[in-house]
Each structure stands twice: as C-alpha cells, then as structure tokens.
Image 1 (cartoon, rainbow, N blue to C red):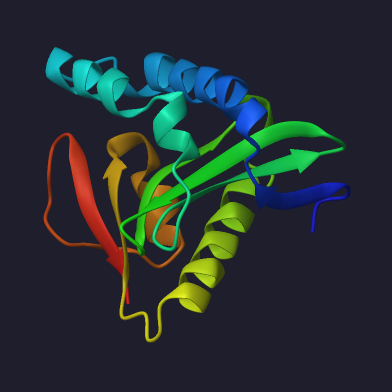
Image 2: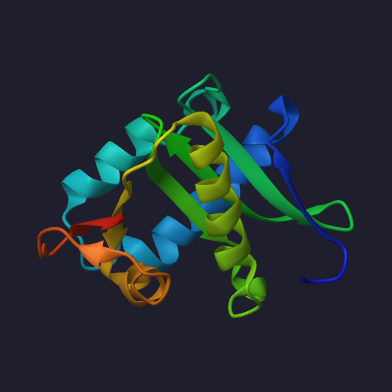
Length: 149
C-alpha cells in the first residue's frame, strides 16, 4: 500500500477537479489519432453530472494521498468500469491497480454473483488491463471491449 493513500467516494464538490484532470488526460493521451466523433461524444458523456451519479449500480471513487486527489474510477451499469484515471505524476506507482481492485471488490459486494466486469479500453491502457487479467472480447481500433471473469 502506498503511504497516505486512501480510496473513497467522490464528494460532490470534487467533481470539477476530477473532471478537469480526466479530460486533460483524454486530450493529451487519448484523443490524438482518434476520430473527432470520439472527442465530441466524450465531452457529452464525461461531465460533472455524470461523475456524480451514485446509486446501487453506479458510483465514482477517488484515490487521494494526504488530501490530494491522485486518481479516480467510475462504475456504471453495476459491473462496467466506465472511467479509470490516475494523474500522470503518479503513473507506475500502483494507484491504478489499487483503484481497479477496490472497484471490483465493491462491484462484488453489490452484485452477487458477479460473473464478469467489463470495460472499453483505449489502446493507451490496453496493456494495463491485460496485466490485470482482462481479456479482449473483440479487437477494435478505437475502444476495445474487455472483460474479467
């Protein structure tokens, strides 16, 4: 475990900060080379309101170190990882895996039995998810559907 790291529900007033860092990673690392329709759809979908949806089948959590948000995960439809992002300066520290494992554990506590967890991976994150045990459902060029049995 990373010293001072905690994973918890995202608070309403944190949505703007979280959205800002998520979109900055999209713009820097995911959008280049992708069709403009993906950009447009992302800006329509990924909003503060979307991040704040929380119910029995949706939640957003943040990872923080000493009060500073360093990552986030958004779950929708009960078992689908919609967003998983870590601030660039924390890449390679294990925070992404900690968020992923925490989200899967929470999904498992809400849905019994969980048969699989799904996501659509960018090519940028494909190796991360493969290392975590996710398998390709269909090979795609933009977003790759994956699942963890």
